[in-house]
Amino acid sequence: MKSLQEKYAPNNVCWGCGPANPDGLHIRSFPKNGEVVAEWKPEKKYEAFDGVLNGGVIGTLLDCHCNWTAAYHLMKRANEDRPPCTVTAEYSIKLLRPTPTNDSVFLSARIVDLTDDRATVEGTLSAGGKVCAICRGIFVAVKEGHPAYHRW
Image (cartoon, rainbow, N blue to C red; front, side, top):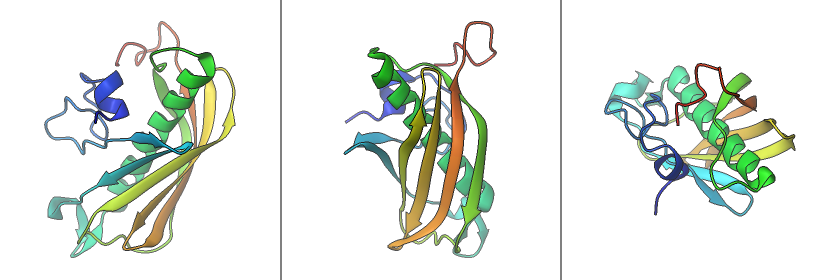
């Protein structure tokens, strides 16, 4: 099954979610029951210290996953067959506890507000059965002339 990223932006080189970036994190997001979910397996090279995921990587995981949640829902709202190219306008992360790297982390995101060209999204990152980080962000569909317009 293809992720949102693989289906709609196979040539995207974003470090967090771009399928075409050989050095990227390759986040794979899937719509499920009104949310968008992903599973991601940490590697030792992404640790802040032994056994704990780096906070910047956590931010990237949530940023990219929530951005794709926004793009997907904006596409559905507009009844289009391709998502608009979206960018992060703002996001905040709360690191609630250390994120272990000994097993997969799970991302989940949902829309809390949606207009024609922007979405407010809340996301969580869980590991070991516990929520380790939460995110809230605003993501905007860009128009022709914006540097990111054709990136997908």
